[in-house]
Length: 275
Image (tube, rainbow, N blue to C red):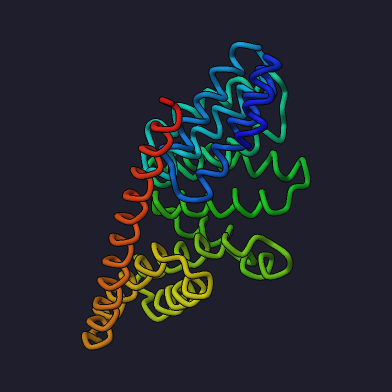
């Protein structure tokens, strides 16, 4: 990538240079280095504004939003997603609009802004249905159900969730199961059907362990601890509480290592650029 960057810079092909910066950003993001990913996406954006390609600018806005989402900086993620969506609407980029609308629904759910989450997720679901994008339909439907759960419209959320597990099992994106199990479990916990809440949280934990997703393992363990306590099974509640603390410590250590590696890579990158 660095050779390609040098080659296109010599040719003064700023469009190609922007694409290489974008690819470098994607590579850094895949390694968990959000700072260098962000810097390279911003460089790509600056160049894309210079040669004035609105489609690529909209893609850069969305990509930057994804990085801020990964950093849990939801306010900045929203700002860039909305910039991306505004441009994509002007371009009538239907697939691009769908992608960013799904992202907006997800971020609004993470922020607890469930009314906005539902509106964007519903729009995404309708677009995905029109475009016949099955996985996008499932992702949007999961976000809609989570939003409805957040505003305590439990019967409506359950209607959406009905059959989703089977749909995902027949070729859907299995990562959506995390949202499905979490939402089902939350609804049943809030409505006092603890045995059903327990069953879905256990499914969520089992799947999180299967894909080794540390954050989800911690979250489902915490929820199982709460549900067992509500049922008066304090021994089980305590065992899951200990498990959740173990996952929390592992997540904390993992994040510290990621940040240390990120800082080291940023320093090395600055050293190279200064030569």
